[in-house]
Length: 449
Image (cartoon, rainbow, N blue to C red; front, side, top):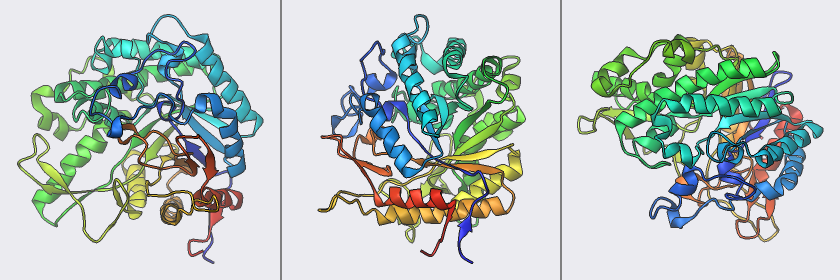
């Protein structure tokens, strides 16, 4: 028997982010986000593109829900736009923004699609960034109040809540590398951002526990990059260890153990952020689940010329690559089993996994994205393998539902199960979407088919 079957009740879903799909960037009372500002800065985004319209989900959400139903999704994870709810980040609530998500949630439930909500997927209100954003401690209370407002309006109908998506990317890509909004290149600020994100996460959990039904589950989404030495040498093993510290343990250890890794505190030295009394206890608020995003591994070699980290990435020549990263399915299994062995989460969800490969519409209105199907098959096989050895994996969410605005890459990178013509906004379910729908119907697949 080669058919890979998943446990009864396994959750099959897809995931999106508000800024990447909604558009309507300044409609119905929404305030500007840091990404609305960032995309207007010359040279930040490929071809100078913006997400002002994106895929117009704000106006086409009913059409998109019909496509979710066509795919047979059991769950849909979406993020709330903070500046759509609180245009200034604090203060006056924009009820029209809340109304939009209210209608979305009710319609999902009517279609028997379970809503999973993310409070923060990178679109900080610009008004808060003007005061220092995640780099300043005031943001912790501002975020908690935002969480309270959303929970009070939507909490009676949403059973799964996520605080942040990928705090590592927020802190490092946005505030150290400058590749994402707000576009800073300051390691001191980046580390403060990371710490404040984690404290805000823990404090928001306390708020959500008070506002939500006892049955609601609360977690966080982390992008985990399994890390390997380029060569079997002590120098490269230590280089891999350092990268793992920055990319993974800097967030996992405080969340699950209530402490920062000692080697990271030593490596960063005087620029490591100030930890106030009670911070680590707040960060360690019990999680009902952890969402894990997997796209790639990191193969690292010792490199003294790299500032602080003293390590650089190697790209094996024998590997297959997407438009952005190496494709390495075994890394999925390695990630899942490592998290289970080291941190023992109650429940795990794969909350993002997908691939950007060139695809397009053929003469017969079909999108034959065979590479994405193969990617899905190979990675889902690793997911099933991890379940077999005891990882408490409860669901899989594909990144992403439909092609969208892919941050600094603009519209060039396509990750969707649904093809979007960005000029006409026409949607076409790709062959990968139809393959995934069959997996959902069968709760499994034949890896050789």
